[in-house]
Image (cartoon, rainbow, N blue to C red):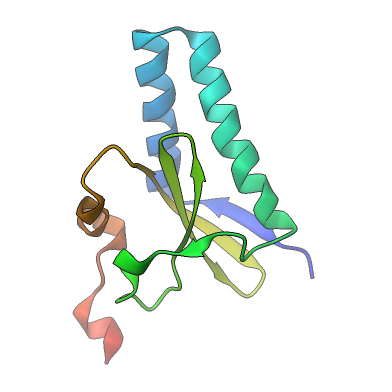
Length: 113
């Protein structure tokens, strides 16, 4: 079964923000390099969808959130059947508990019923 990878709107926006930040603060070449490294890291999931560790800070959720690390970034994803959704790209230089503050990742209390 072929694995398909999709990027959430949030993760696409975060990837663009990373690119924009490094383009302004350093240069476009470095920004592309960082962005491409994140995308390349995600590509390993096509052959090994459970490569990432489980994200314990998101263990209260219905989804089995996992993550990969690339440089300063935690690539948070979940797998359902043959679809992997990249949920967020979290900057690990922040307080780790802020992961729970990411709006699309907040659990809906009624989902657990």
